[in-house]
Length: 247
Ligand code: GLN
Image (cartoon, rainbow, N blue to C red; front, side, top):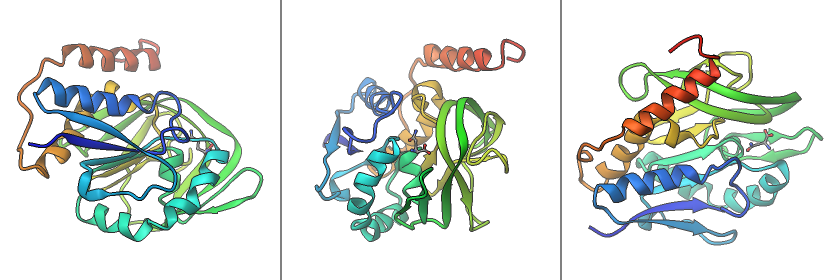
């Protein structure tokens, strides 16, 4: 099998709070299972080549960086949508998540038109939403908890009520601090405010993303791996957030 390629969109611009750790986590898990895996950076003005990609990833960025690349990526919006519909796995964090909607209005009132792939919008509000987050989700089958960290001024609101959240907020703010929803899950696409990085702290979610990637290569599942350390990291992060009260 040819090397699995994880496409990292604009790493110089969109990579906050260790977002890249998500890619390293996927790469390591694949390598442990005997697959070769490359993390391939995509620079501004380079076209996305989905045929050569097993996974697309974009991290978060500041308003300034988002403004630099929104127009660039909008040119590729139709192509990207075709790939997402066809099941290409992808993950979009914070500023990357905001980009998928209709627009993001920054704190100074500038409206950045998004890709319009999903019917939601993001509006900067008073004060930033910062802190650790716990979500509850059924996306991996059973109810599981996801642990992460958020830091955003934008509040995201779904205009289309059929859109599915990634999870329900147990602790933290989530999409907007009001409706209890966090992130977006559509086919093999995950969009979320959770930095962290997210995957190293959440084995179940990593397994889910790996399964999406490998299924497209005709592989049903990874051989069992010893993930006790990763599970301990999850438990510890959760305990810290809850101040040792639960778990
Ligand atoms: N600039 C955006 C906001 O503050 C996204 C920030 C981020 O990616 N962490 O909402």
